[in-house]
Structures are given as C-alpha cells and as structure tokens.
Length: 112
Length: 116
Image 1: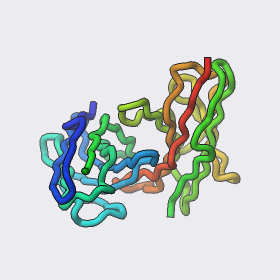
Image 2 (image 1 turned 120 degrees about the horizontal axis):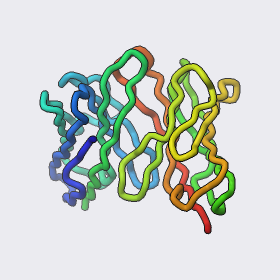
Image 3 (image 1 turned 30 degrees about the vertical axis):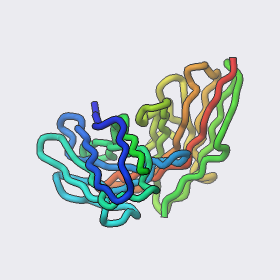
Image 4 (image 1 turned 45 degrees about the horizontal axis):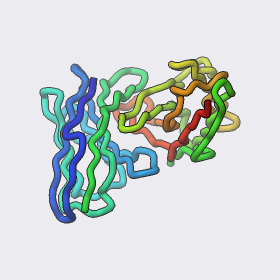
C-alpha cells in the first residue's frame, strides 16, 4: 500500500518541512492533497514519471519531487499557520480508462 | 470548473435505518464520480466509483450510488446502517478523461453518526 512519514509533525511559522510518501509498487503517478480541518482534500499537485503534471491553487513555496524508487516528497517553505492540515499522498498508474488513486494515511502538520 | 456539493455536513441515523448521503456535482464534461470514506486518523478509502456504463454502482460494505445525469447527482445509499459505518464520507469528481492527471475535486464531507 501507500505509506507516509512522519505521522505527525509540529513546526513553527517560517520553517521548512519535508513530507515523504512511498507509493504502491509499480505506480508512476503521485498526487498530493491538503485536507484542512473540517474540509475536503484539496489538490496540491501531481508528479508523473518524475515531472510535475499539474498543480492546484497553491503557491510556489509548495514543491515536490518524485524519485524512481516509488518514493516522493512534498516540501513546504516559509510555513504559515494556515498550512496546518492533514497532507495526503495518493499513488496511481496511468491507464486507458481512469487513474484510481490509492491514498496513504496522511501526515498531520501543525504550524505554531 | 468542477465542483462538488455535499448537502448536510452531519447525518445521524439509527442502526438498521437507511443511509442517504447527498452529492451534487458540476462538470463541463462527463465526469468520473467517486465516494470515499475516512475513519478517524486514517486516509481515504474508495467505497465506489462511476466511470462509464451502468449508472447504479455497487461498492464495498453494502453501499451503492446512482449517477443521475439530469440531476447532476451521485447520492450514496445503504439500506441498513451499521455502527461500523460511522465515519466521514467524501464525494469527489474527476474530469480528466483520457489524460494521466486524474485530479480529484472533493466535497466538504459528511460526518455520519450511527446511533444504537
């Protein structure tokens, strides 16, 4: 399955953070979502074959990397209080019909 | 633009009662539609999906949903609620047909409470 680390993280405003995701084996696509408290997940961006393949309405201080070994990272610079949320990664493999996304358990980030 | 509206942020039912969670979507193209469930401190689990074909879709744990294009709806139902169904439910839409993107747009969620 999809795993994420760490489970929980506490940072202070202005700091930088890196969240990690391990995709399901063989999946070539990873998407990241931000789920604020009481909200549905919001699409941050997607990486396909190690290149950014689409971005939601998030500023450039949100960046990512995808590696050939089924791992990926979400980096957030200059943390703001509103960045406090559950961050979900989802992996998928491109198919002819649609890309079912398999979600990890998430990393809960608290910014103080 | 794609969007999802889930009517009712909280739904409470008695065990054994019908569960009905409402979802309406907006999409400029024929959409893919999904229902996900989220248990406390866990990620999202896919309950069911509509991509093409039969408009009545059956999923896991006895849930089903019907795609009604004329009403732009995809309501989730279960004939008899169980205590273990208590969770947060999210409706999602994707319109990225034929591309690798598959971006999901989620509703705000409906918290289902099941009373004994």
